[in-house]
Image (cartoon, rainbow, N blue to C red):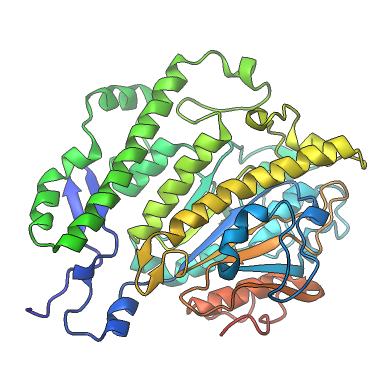
Length: 455
């Protein structure tokens, strides 16, 4: 009854560790009205999830526009979240086309996805592109959180050398760009992501010294136990339950990462399991295990407001990853050049749906976590899509794009929104930035905001 509130930036601290907290009732002003109390702890998050090599569009794109559309087979796992999704058709990246530069559609697909800028064709160090949408947002709101942004991936990639017909690997392996010459390479190692979120990360530390330290390291929760106990004494029953559930989730992630690393040390040569697929020690070979770890850490980062801007590449563009866990030993990229081979098309369809299934589980988890006057999903704007539509023909128009979440009620959801063909995808991004309170007139090849999308 003092009228005081716990700071949203309260941390549980320990040796080399700092754990941010989820939104708690104690963080809301004691005498504010209910609407103000809810709004005071509900920031808007922006997240981009990228899938490579295009999608079988006839099994993605709904037939009907508006709210009465039916989900095609690839998007079917998302149907329970229908009211919180917006599916788009007609959006295009003209800058992903050759425009006189010849082959290299995969490099252009990834590099233009969040920038809307045609990359300079070079395999050298003189790369040139432009700032990406996520980094425009990070520069505007990143000072409000411990990390301005977080970039993750599920497949190891290189940033140097030629990866696609004379285009630098930096273009294929990054969708986030801080500037025209500076990509933000996605982190694929769960341990390094965990330590970036919770401390104890030293980029100069060698693998040997890290392994030695980890043999003697306590759980991260042990390191902050004293702070945890002190805080719990100040919280009410509901907040104590919320804190316990949150810290349990952190501990479960920590244990799973440890299990992955233990398994990696015991496994045989990776080349015997997945030829041509590079994975360093400590990163799950299994896509399901890897994606769940990364999505869970993104959830924790959003829940604790460590960052509000996130990107994840479910694989690098042009990826030839096999998906043996669903019975597909063929390389993904090779399959997309199917030349209407129905057996290959069916395998791509299965890969496309497999990606969506894991994305749907992530969204479902976000929707189950209370946040302000809604859920984490309600207060987010999460884009899912690819810079290529038809992988066989390398098309860059009518791209597969959807947005989950309403950005705290700022976006209209629950419909299939059709726009005129060749509408710049960057127009959507301008609208999302505006809904986040980030004002910018132009992004890449944008021509204006999308009509009838915002409330």
